[in-house]
Length: 186
Image (cartoon, rainbow, N blue to C red; front, side, top):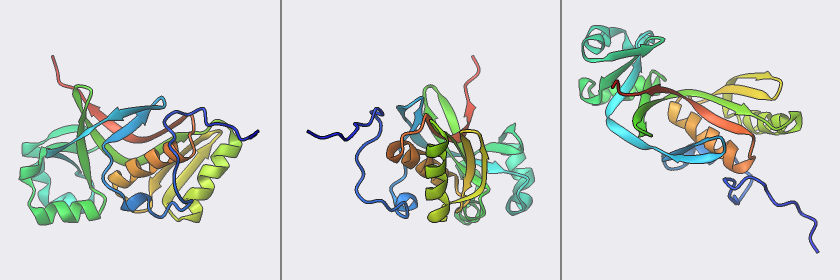
C-alpha cells in the first residue's frame, strides 16, 4: 500500500522532468489561473499596450497618444496597426510592449510581473529556489507567504508562462501574472 500523498490541487498536472529551463520556450499560453481555476484567454492581435515612459517609445509618443487610450501608469492601449513591425519588435525586446488578451467580456493587458501566494513558508522557499537556481526572475520581493517578481527576460508573456508553471508544478494558493483589466463601458 502506497503512502504517497495525492495532490489536492486539481489544476496541477503531472510534469515530466524537473527542469524549469523549458518554461520560457513553450507555446504561448491560452489560459491563466484565478483561485486555482483555469481561465481561458485569447490573444487580441489587433491591440497592443505600450509603456510610453520607456525610452524605446519616446519617438512614438505623439502618435501613440493620438491613437491610443491611456489605461494607467503611462500604459496606452493602441491598435497594433499604429506600430511598424520593427517598432513592435524593438518595444517588445526592450520590455515596453505588452500583449492584449480577451477574456470574460473584457480585455486583459498582460504585465511583466508575477505574484505568488504560497501555502506556507516552506512552499515560498521552494518557489524562490526554483526562480533563483534557474535564473528566471529579477526583483524578487518576499513578504510573509507572498512572493512578487519580474521574469528575467522582462517579457510579459514569460510572466504568464512562469505564473502558470508555478501553479501547475507547485500548486500554491495563488500564482498569477499581473493584468490590467479593461472592461467596456455600458
